Image (cartoon, rainbow over all chains, first blue to last red; front, side):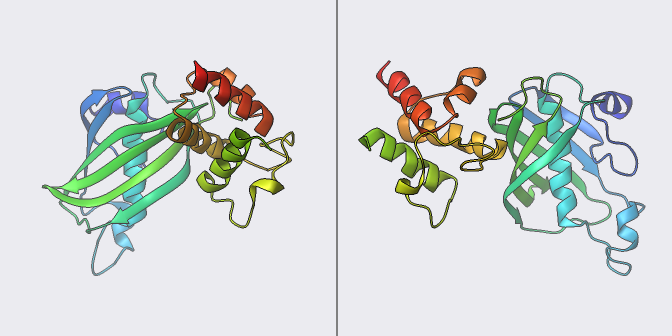
Length: 144
Length: 85
């Protein structure tokens, strides 16, 4: 899955659509996606001017967006937001030219909340691991 | 206080990291969410996991789960019922 198919599923757009390709997708079970970093990414202008490297928090956002593909139904038009970040670890940096592999699996869910476990890696090197809680406020049952 | 009720309260305190709170301070009938103990929906997910790990009770029916989360009394009754089954 790439390009327009990704846009049909996620509501994110330039400059904040951070998934370029979905390589494997089993809704509710596992998603593997990719983000290709180019030197033209807007955040490299200031992070940092002489030493472009990917802000760690954006790796969390990439995992959250990849996690959106665990949902069967398209999320375009729905309001999804990040409710909690747990156990985030940044083990390495990512640079222009890197091809980032985003792997997510669901960890738990209840009443419109889904907790996922994610790993960002590049050529076998783990750069970031975290658990994220995503809230889907379009869920008609709502939450407690 | 029944043993199970005390265990439920201890689990809530431990799981939600309600530091400085003792089981005695949690009222059996005060609402867990909103006013009362002031828990939110993120805490609800933690409680679902805590109940599964600690008591071996899975909450699969969300409506029933939300009903059980009304207060400590209803939650204890829910756990007792489903643990026995």
